[in-house]
Image (cartoon, rainbow, N blue to C red; front, top):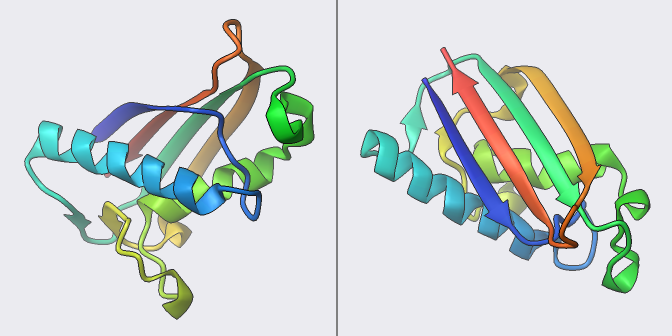
Length: 129
């Protein structure tokens, strides 16, 4: 099974200003996509997951949030945190759509590209089996 969705807005790396809001936005779009496609709020079970993310980032944006001011590994973390259950008591916002932690991610492909229209977004695909 799989879901594909797009989150509009300039991606925010983990610990960057506004990263929790970005994580909540990712979760909201993911939950709506899951509900629309499969009619459920959460996928239960320890499946294996493949995640693909393309971050579309302006060359330069406000607050030094341009493409070369963001590390790819830090961009990925809020996405995974929004998708997968986290046992950390400080992260119990119930934003996740997979009731499994991200240790079940067996493939992760992430890239960042310069936005052709100076707008940010993230294209996200998750497969599970």
